[in-house]
Structure formats: C-alpha cells, structure tokens
Length: 296
Ligand code: NAD
Image (cartoon, rainbow, N blue to C red):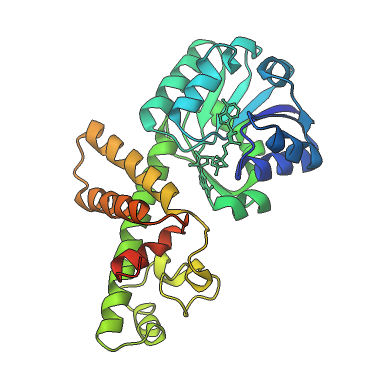
C-alpha cells in the first residue's frame, strides 16, 4: 500500500482517485470544493485538511487540475506541494496544460530533488471512472517507471512520449487533429445530406472508404449511424466544445512558440470559438455539426 495525495477531485479526478483507493492505496483527497472531497471520502479516500496534511505523509502526489496556472500554484505556490513533500516524492500531473508550464513545473520539481512527470489523459469521464484512460507521459525513464504501476490502475494504455512536457505535446497534437477531423466529418455529412444522401447511406459508404476516421465511426456527429454517439442525445456531452476549445488554444500557443504552421488547427479553434459564443447549452464538441448546418 502506498500513501497518495490526490489533488483535484473534479469530473475526472474523482474516478481516478476512486480507482487508486479501490486498489488498496491510502488516498488523501484535497480539493477547494468540500463537496468534491466528500464524494471522494464516500468512494474510500481520506479527507485531507490542507496541503500539508495531504502531502507530508505521501510517497506519491497526483494532480488533476483545470489549467497551467492552477498547476503552477498547487506545486510551487505558497503552501504548495513542493513546500511539504518529502525528498524523493513522486509527482504525477495528469491535468491538460500548456507545454511551457509543464516543463517549468517539472524542472523545478527535479531541481528540488523530486521525480515528476506530466501525464495528461484521453478517455474522458467514462474512462476515468472505468480505469481505462490513455496516459501520455513526459519525464525521465526513472520517474516514468515509478509512475507506471499507478497509471496502470487508472488507465488501459500508458505511453512514455519522451522528456518533460512531451505528454502534453502528444495530447494537444492529438486533440488538434481530432478537432480538425470532427469539423471535416460534419462538413461531409452536411453536404451529403444537401445533395440528397441520407446519413446512414453516406456512413455505410464512407466508413469503408478513404474518408473513414474516428470522428465518423466512433462518434458520428450526424444522428443515426453510431448509436452511442452524443448526436443521438441532442449533443449532450461527452467531451464539451469548451474543452475542445481549450485544447485547440493550447495547440495554437504551442504552435506559435515552436514556429509550426497549423492553418487548419487555427481555423478549427476559430470555429469552436464561434460555437462557444453562439451556445449556452454546454454541448458536446460533436455539436459543431449545428454550427456547420446552421441550426445553432
Ligand atoms: P473539473 O473542473 O471538473 O475539476 C477540477 C478540480 O480541481 C475541481 O474540483 C476544482 O475544485 C479543483 N481545484 C482547482 N484548483 C484547485 C486548487 N488550487 N487546489 C485544489 N483543488 C483545486 O475538471 P475535469 O473535467 O476533472 O478536468 C481536469 C483536467 O483534465 C483538465 O485539465 C481537463 O482539461 C483534463 N481533461 C478533462 C477531460 C474531461 O472529459 N472532463 C478529458 C481529458 C482531460
């Protein structure tokens, strides 16, 4: 049994912390929200009173926070993880954040004698609850190898993508591609319909032809062909358009600093920003179909 401080018990963190506790670890739960901590306690975790109480007895710290600013503050800020962690503590940040912040925080951790990796995930709330997430990790071999047994409890696929920050790089490049092919898939279904092809007929053809892609066959944005897709539930999430917009913005920030041309990534960001400005319903990212077909 390992003592683990788990900080950030929101939609994703609660499932992940629950799985660590169910595997027999002592999970010390910390969140700004008392309700989130109470849910974690119900799921077998121990409520930590503050950062000191969470981190001091822990051999491992896991964080699942909204953005880079939160991660910088939780680790390096006043009353932060670095202040209370014992030398050699393993730190795993699973939040999706900008590459530069990830590299900065991990650099500070290593400098202070800790092992740390970035380990953002894909798989969503369902994957977090089921323990089937995909982890994309950046950091030294030593830190990654220490983290792997814990990631295996929370996920199904665990990849070491290279040095610190490379997990975030893999995540945002993947999600930029996802945003692009989701919009492309919407355009194709919308045009097919306007040309007189129903969604199922176009799906049957394109899903076995060269237009086939994940957005089509696992998450079809046109209602009908893929039973489990949010398009069949009025685009209830799933993975919200706001989350997709966050990741597309991270990709654009990274592209700018790496001087990489990503014209379709930029255009996808603009379209998701338009969708976010036009809707108040917190729709799934596949609901960009409504922007494309003019029904938003
Ligand atoms: P969330 O907003 O539901 O949870 C974040 C939690 O962090 C909240 O409970 C909040 O109270 C807590 N928090 C914020 N600042 C804190 C602080 N200083 N100390 C302690 N707790 C603090 O978000 P989420 O959906 O769980 O997502 C978490 C991360 O995972 C994000 O980076 C997101 O981009 C990423 N992600 C989310 C999904 C998804 O489908 N929800 C999928 C993949 C990746």
